Length: 458
Image 1 (cartoon, rainbow, N blue to C red):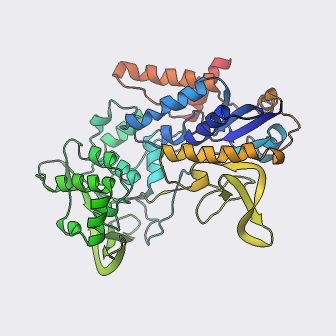
Image 2 (cartoon, rainbow, N blue to C red):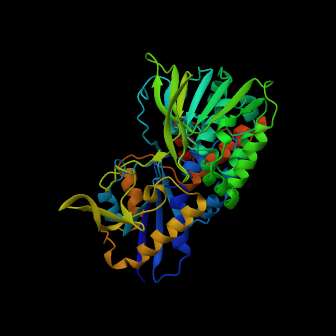
């Protein structure tokens, strides 16, 4: 019987779901799957992109763990595509590859002054407070008044982590250096800016509702933002999610304020236009917008300014290019048609319309950073079905033996981690947290993660 040797680059939800779907799919061939992950631990953004005080979302890891623990998928962590292994290597050892590398960079927001000291991308901050091994251990938390630009869940996460009292994070898996950093923060006010109105935000109701439960934090809203036009009224009347969001915001408007030591301000209809300061952020300037009658906004020509000492840009994530793989710089994804990777038409540069045999994509690197776990699963299903149907164009590897890739990594001195190594690291982190009554304490330094993970093979 034919055997499919498949490489998947990226061991986050997208990669793991693709592997699981393929193994469960009815097919006329055997399957052997190897997952390659640049980090020493699996789970991608679920481990390194979800705020530590969201254990409900962290529960997704349980489902991912069950897939890996079946034992029919191998994982090679701490292996960097493009350096430790290349596309040429994959072609020698596999019939095809699925890229599931996600989107970890901040999207650009090139306001005047965005490069001032004190201006940060949200993705960088999220990586810091989630204990990503490849970011600095220290973060400059010196501002009393902070602006967060964006009206999505990442903006809420960033604002919540900045304004929440750090002692209320002690029971979570927050790394020790992050806790100590947040303790030293002098913050009193965090301002969230969005260019559209309350009925057009991208928050999910649960995320927003949880924000209102913060201890000793006043929620500050402005009456001028709630003079709804007909389009907003219709959205509230016809969309249950928008209705719930409006209900939460209206409840906050009725609260007494003035007694809390910290405040979270919402500025709707506010389009940031400039960060000002000499060498360092000193203020944010924005234009007041107004509804256009169709759910969008137009500028009013009225400009306002607020003194702040730091700004976080939470305007979306962006994919990164991969060595030897086509990349669309405009939208930050691998160009593809339903997961089949497309390459440049040599006669029309920038036109991706020719299928690249053996190469597929899934997850955010395929469709951009939108959608939740349900989208990731359907995404993977679409890609996998095309992979199965494309058997005639698979690569013909010279060395498909499963041991061959192990020998290659070892010959290059790559300190790769495996599933047993992840179990060892997982148990180590849980043990660190037990004396303090915490779910775990993350190990942050990469070399320490690798040392713990590879000790089981020695």
